Image (cartoon, rainbow, N blue to C red):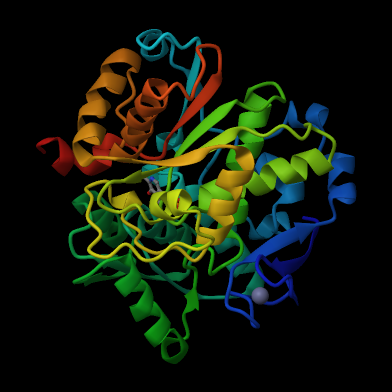
Length: 388
Ligand SMILES: *Cc1c(COP(=O)(O)O)cnc(C)c1O
Ligand SMILES: [Zn+2]
């Protein structure tokens, strides 16, 4: 509601937010939304939140849409932060939580980004949206575009989980399967978008998906009674949720809601696709593309991310890190989480649990740390991984 402008995350060039924008017109890096936080904090208060809708639009003052009439919603966000006492007790942890993002529309946290991006597309009067996707972003865009009466043109790798492909088709999207990875899908969108009149909503090449995803940070704080966890484990592809949460913490501090302490943020990637893990340990500012990327945790099959430097900076400033886990660890971890807590997590979510075990073995977490694992989708969308 109080969006003022967009700023480049690399060169700080200011961009007009009253017209559609993709990346920085000077340097090609992602743009971030800026708000009048003084105005926002007048009506967005801890008290006012008590009676608001149980969706991420409860934070409307710090979301970009100007008029409520343009909000395209299916009831996204405000997902449960489940205590995980049995899983925690197995490892001597007293405050382990699972943020269950499977409970979003289209059963993944991609709904958060797409509700914001499609609402802004509606505000701008756009009609045809296009995106490359590893699977769940496509499902979410298909749903929100249908809801808004827009066209969705989706490009996914041919071996994307069936659930994602079928979901998009049943929501009336135009689906193209590509022999390649999400990067090849992105190249196809870039090649065709001008001639086709598509607006590109690739993550972080469109400024508002990150705004939707940043609400993860607001929700964690609110659900933990305005404190932040000590440790966050986040399964990282494009990194939108990670950088979004980091941005949310900053906004909350500037509104006087929290102090300067931050959670230690850990990026979890797959052994077969770990560009951020490699760059983190090599001390690099940017990540080089992971060639021949391979993992069954399709949401993590992102060999190159445009927001790499923003992620790496946040991981380092937070005192966290980056870990790679194997597909076997993810798939076997699913049953451990499920049998202890009753949540059929996606492989990406199980990856966070596998990474937590690595942190425990390395003495990098303490028994009384408040730890949040992100389950970003549901195992039901990945039956192929579980013998289905
Ligand atoms: C997209 C996706 C991720 C990665 O999210 P980013 O915010 O792009 O890093 C993780 N898990 C699942 C299930 C996903 O669909
Ligand atoms: Zn720039």
